[in-house]
Amino acid sequence: MSYTIALAGKGGTGKSTVATLIIRYLTEELGKSALAVDADPNSTLGLSLGVKVERTIADIRDDVVEKKVDIPAAMPKDRYIEYAIENSIVEEKKFDLLTMGRPEGPKCYCYANNLLRKYLDKAEKNYPFIVIDNEAGMEHLSRRTTNDVDLLIIAFEPSIIGVHTAMRITDLIGKLPIKIKKKVYVMCKVPQKGISGKVESELRNSGIEVSAKLPFDDEIYESITSGESLLQIERDNIVYEGVRKLIASSLEG
Image 1 (cartoon, rainbow, N blue to C red):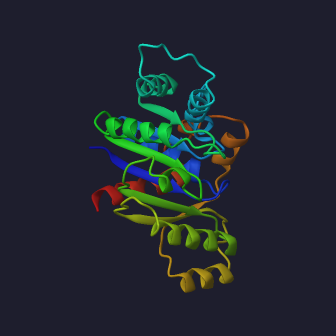
Image 2 (cartoon, rainbow, N blue to C red; image 1 turned 90 degrees about the vertical axis):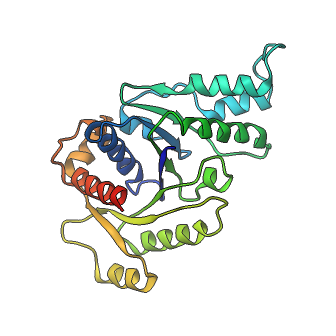
């Protein structure tokens, strides 16, 4: 069975950066293969990982539902979708990437989503780790298109809005139709001077215990703005060091 790590948070918090650095730690330092799943509609995980995504699950779903593809008469629809999903995966030496794309629109895609979940169930046998980069609303988790989660990382920025977002995600967790074994909170992009007294007060009132405070980092900022893979940052990067410690301790616990 795979160990599933899911990340949730608003776009721009640094969530995909953390996901990328987790994948680096798992593959390079633990020597394990991983399936990276980009379940954020913004689909930026591929950019962070330095790979090009040609096709998403949303593209496959739309093509089938809107009958844009000619499925061979002898091939069942579910087998075609499974085949299309397998072909949409970007395969790298140490990890594979599956990109969800847009969430459901006004049409019903329940059939395709159920097949996606079946595929992820099968993937558990092939990958020691699955890392899922979700949106704040956790659309795919809420629709049960992914498996139960061993570790949920809630990423947020050091602001009042960030704390409130983390609280909303926490509230949503209790309503999800999946089991989450452990959750941790990670504060990203912490300024050098630290966080404000107001944010500290809001954190105390919220009851949120922050497991890691990751600082704003120039090397990561420059990599993101230049479109370079975050897998290439220095091993002693302070943010990577924080992510490494977080995952190492979470796996031990």
